[in-house]
Length: 213
Image (cartoon, rainbow, N blue to C red; front, top):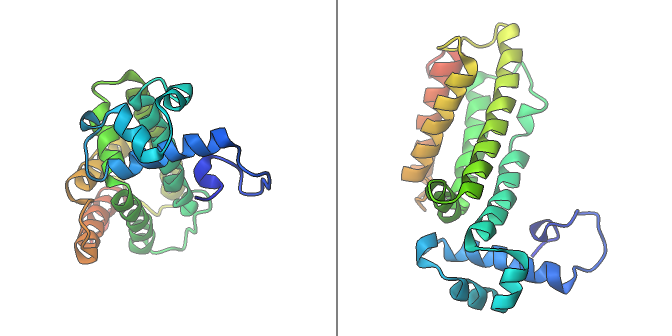
């Protein structure tokens, strides 16, 4: 388990404390268990046994399994953010298809690796206010970042969005992307995941760039 996986800066040379390790084990345990079980099927006892920690340790860090799910989601979403370097330093000379496919492929692979967790988060939005707020905040942040890039590209004459309501368009495309990943993102077949990349990329290219490929 790396330092970043237990929530420590990569340059911090201090040995992780016992408490940090216990918390990290709980986060890792719920991610692993959600590969084969829904959150509703999991009990705190199952999670603590899988993590090798006590129930009292669980409740020291998390008030519920939803709070644990939120912590795990923060960790995975950080991977999505790290996989979007082009959103911060966009090369305006990049071919639309290359740019779109790179970002989409990174997202599909991360979703595949954490499908159980992400599916649990999407499902839990309707039953837990903290998860609902977290999902809304994260998707709103991502939508805003994408809109900033598209505004830059639009000013440079690089994109032809299908709607003048750019935030609404990006929000709709985000919803389409999430739904497609929920339905098809769990496949272990690399060729099928590449088909998912093709489908999602084609929609974004047509709706945002105004091109077909």
